[in-house]
Length: 179
Image (cartoon, rainbow, N blue to C red; front, top):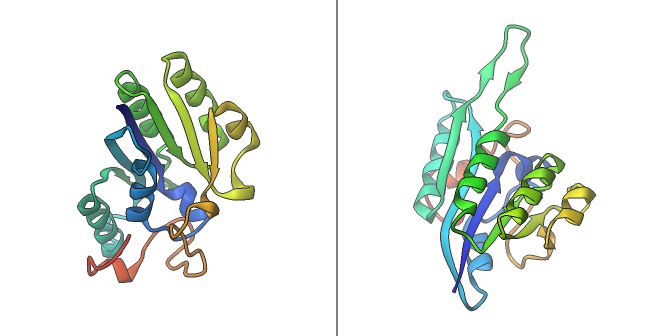
């Protein structure tokens, strides 16, 4: 059986695609025969004062995702820092030593070097990314690319809510349905 790791860049998907159903995504990546999920991880920064985001992370955890998160930092000039790229890359590389397939759900071109490094470890890298918002270099570097829009039932980007980049989804706060 192929050992598979799923790594989701929550902020990137939220900003470029919108709301997705994380349970559908999990089913999609594990539906292929001969695949065993080793880990599903969702990476996100969050506002510590936003209960909706805490509920969102709890819902992801209940679906079977390992939630890797850190609070956003507000700088004196008013800008917000909350990048999770380093955590994403370290976890993927560390777990890559025991994986056959790494599935990166992102469109961020900053991960091209990560894809190459995983490939050097002998890991097949698949990218699932938002259509025109996935960096072409990331698509070229991957062993396989899937347009997120073609994953049946995964998305409904017509219902974005909260502030840009922050997946505050009140309907999920109740723990009902898909995240």
